[in-house]
Image (cartoon, rainbow, N blue to C red):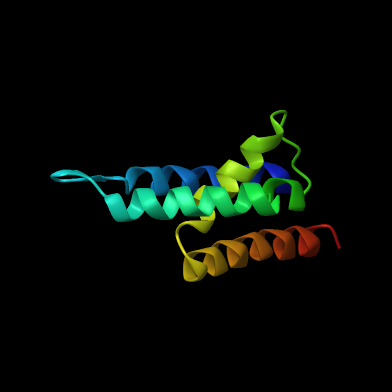
Length: 97
């Protein structure tokens, strides 16, 4: 159950990040640059939020790339996202008591 909620949370975050690429008059070079840098760093550093939370994707580098998309939103966004994940774990912990 917890993995399903985390996947849903990450999916929404990734989709919202992708939507930021398009502006009224074309594409956002800043957003694209941020995404490329985020993905590059996560691939090179082998940082995978999915694996961190015990969610194994069948394509190894996909976890790095999707994590890079999330990371490209910045530290405040990532902090809020991880806070939401923590709330999921805390709620499940309280339910299972």
